[in-house]
Image (cartoon, rainbow, N blue to C red; front, side, top):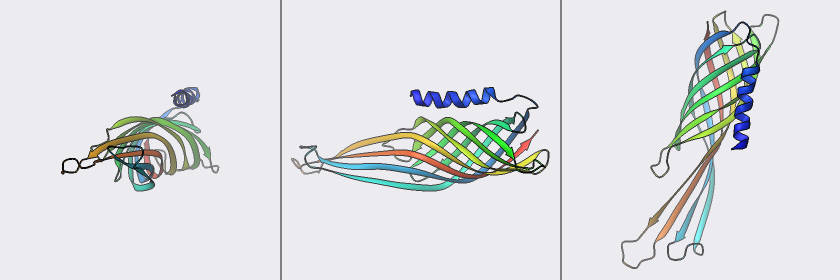
Length: 210
């Protein structure tokens, strides 16, 4: 928890300490692809003697699906911007809704200032709704960073392609006992665990600046 608080405090401190000259607000949206990396295990135990007659199978997998985002923020000057993002992603394991706070530093690529490279940090909250009723929905802290290229079409419109990495903090477990219908028969208990380690996004967005 201390590490998470330090990360969030660092992002907020960076935002506050950034220059506040000639602020321009913007709104926008984007679409892209998100890859979620999961891992977990399935343990089967004999009810009458758990721990002795048990078998555990570990697994890991990645899910690739679309991600959609809406965002709004402000250019503090030509080199600094801060913004909030709402994003939605769904795969075979869970639905995700994220609220993120981000800071980017922009570097002009050329004298025209139309093309910019950006790099920055992100922290926020991710709400995960598992597709199975055996696990509960939860809100989890996420943090990471992003980089990409922004192109200024005119004074009001810009577009960008970016890559974002988010470290996730989601763990879930569920157990159920399977009892055969025959009286006196030995039952088994099945315990499943799953965790979401990280997410990677590749996105294309368009912003309106005013």
